[in-house]
Length: 314
Image (cartoon, rainbow, N blue to C red; front, side):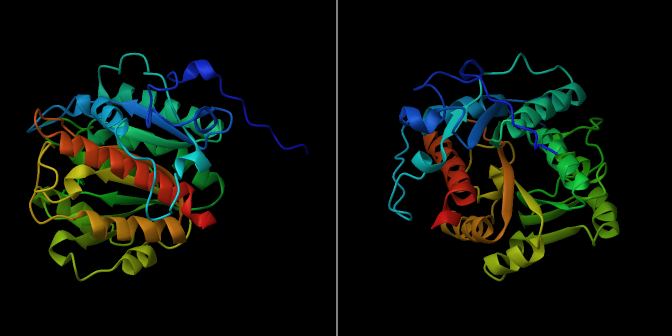
């Protein structure tokens, strides 16, 4: 049987050169037919319960990326020139309720995968992950595989609802696990969890492995990779996983979190040893005068793409 060919993306689906993620990338690096990564901005913000502003996160990340140096001293090159990245045009207005919004994002991620792209979703509130992972969970199930979500976060996000919102940002990981028998979770940096989350956590010990914030410095990147095991990996990075001294520009900043170098050590080894198939970076709430948070988040996006798409060649 002849293998099905992948559809060819149209240039009109993406922002013009100079306007997307890493604006100064040469033409060859942002050719939709050649690029391996696709950045999807999705500023969903319906259920934020403390500090707001995550709807502006994607634009702030994009703007900061225009100031990033593409040269990576770790790899002694400009990795994006190898794998290439395109930025999807802004979607139609985000649907007004989270159920419809998750369906909308699911379709955007599905299209990117059909084009052979590695989707990188920029959020927006963490709720969006429950929609973004559906195409991966579906593909993994068809192959008889388990999809592992690698969650960087301050919060467990294992409530079934929060303050009357079933599809709340505080329930993001619950709604990634509950509908999908073939999805498991490895969570890193958790240091804020509520009593209502504990029954679900304890009932799913075979599906959830947690590296608690209180144990940072005791667990290693190798421990995390061992917990992930085999199969496809989806990275969801809530930036409040970082210590609040690094990232105050988020809805619920928490002390006692991860710092840059130890986070890179984890992402580097995961990129080397695991099959990372997609990612999102969420919960940046830009604040005037704190553009360093925007820049850090933008650089995080570039590093995740590079560790997932470039370093296996080195």
